[in-house]
Length: 261
Length: 275
Image 1: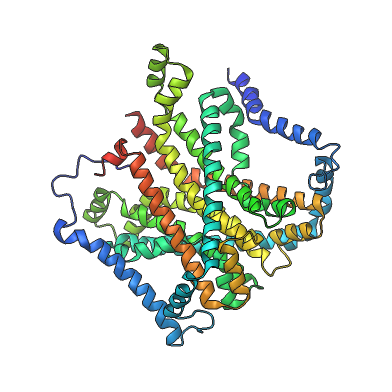
Image 2: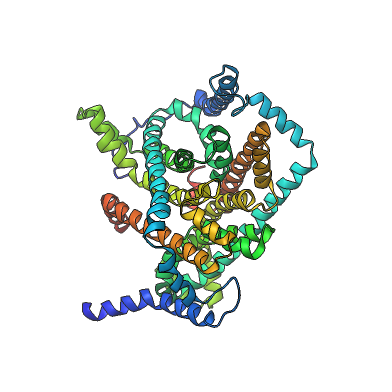
């Protein structure tokens, strides 16, 4: 039973992607269109374009900036969000202002940050990513901390759990599903900002190289860049899900148990 | 959020004091806004931040006032809103139709799952070079980016919604020989409705982000382009004024979509419970 299930699942998961790629391959096979080169050409161009040098000097720094900015946003967002979420007054005071900052489309930050520091170094790019990713994490943390179960907090208090222990085991644990939801939103904003920050005054980086290919009309190379960027997005979201599944396993279990009741 | 032990909270449950609490929240919110404005006003005036980089709030406000009287500003605003609305509308219709069709056929759903999971996280900005080549800085460029980004938000929510249909209700409808269309209209659609509205809310803000991004990066006419032009010509107060407008536009969109959500779902328990 189990053994015959397996190939079926593989077939279902891989069937459509294979068909679609095959369609692309054959539909574009004889293509002479400038914008849509044959897929075979793109595949050939891929290893030639992304050799060790661009991987080391374009892709790696881009990803490093993304992760740097994202981690800063995560730390600041969770810390500030917990502080704001714990205090009713502070929350009422900050909420409209935070709503405004969240509503500002993040790419608009680029010209504003460019005013302060120019836009050539890595710092400004990391700052852009961090500022863009901050708001969803911050607001979701506030919401998560706010909607904590009062009983859990009271229980922690009556067992005389220390401040740090309460914060760690009750507050952060309890709000982690919401924090994860915010962090997931932020990740896709981070990838967008990683690319956009490189379109301004940078000559190296994944986003910058894709645009350079486009400007120099190196179309198959541009396509390889687009595909690489897409793969990066897929890998990052898969990694995120892996971490989320491990750290939120208790929550999933609890929720499923409640549904069955 | 789920609360696990509802039985233990007795009459001692803490509730905000009603009489004073009613105005407290908005008053504090207003105070927060005023403090933020005062900080932005004070920082450059006290010389903490160079006023060439961050002009005092009053200067931004004056610049904004000046722009409100200019036709260019309103044209830009109109172009941004038109692009946003068109993209959002296309994404909504496409997302709902595709979502209901895929969601109602289990085989189709199983077969497409991996493809959707793969295509969804592809960042829409990856398409920027392609649309620039094909459309340049015409509004179509922005439209494609907006539709691509917003479509997935709607589609995924609709799929969740359709999967949420109670099998007993669906089987009941089927045994009463409801037609396929009648089942979609009176069983699937009401169940999926809350998810569709959530998808709408998410898609509305994503669509604004992508619209402004396309204007800023590609130069599609609209407010985003004006920001880029103002910044590169060194018109700092104008840059901030426009950023302020775009932010307020985002807040307005959030408020409106939440109002739509409450209105469309006023029959639904999640909204009725709040009242």
